[in-house]
Image (cartoon, rainbow, N blue to C red; front, side, top):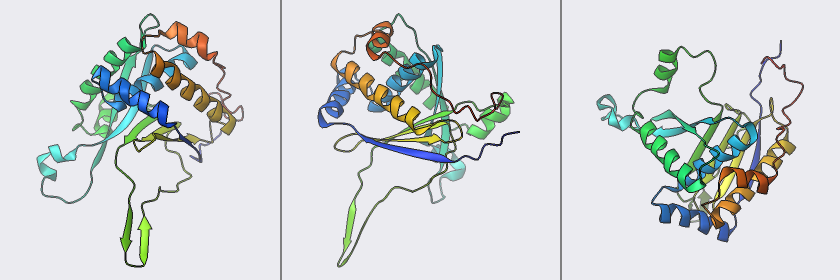
Length: 235
């Protein structure tokens, strides 16, 4: 019996200035959040790979301050919410963005409900989601205390709790870190996926009225994710 070791790999990308600006412009013109735009495009990517209509993604939220029991405590309390969206081939990206944004709002309405309790209530024997999407919008800063300078650095962690984690940083040019499970994916698979994601970003940033069928033709996706054959198929 194969046992998952949760070993992780990391792929780091920086979107160009022009592409970053166009994605932000889509959010502005659509009156949607940048997170909504990025999540919509990742949903579409996974729909193109899997042909599944329902795509489920997890994202962390700092929510506990809404709970009176945490009001007088110091610290950061995070919860995880699950965002599930249906991707319709006949719709334009613009329309899908509308639906996904509504799904995000619906999920955030229940952000105070503990994720562990959700799993318990559903009696889930398998994960509710395998993909995490995060958007960080704080600026990395360098602090100077006389001769002792230091700056914020990413946590170097080669473990992966999820099959895939897409962590965006909304800095001058949007940055993306893709953390992936080495138990499931090979690096070349993630590199191929990242190229398709960037191409998808580029296509949609020039025309948000494209539909899924057109995007599939344009991307010419390799639909095989090259999942490591060493893993038991029943895992």
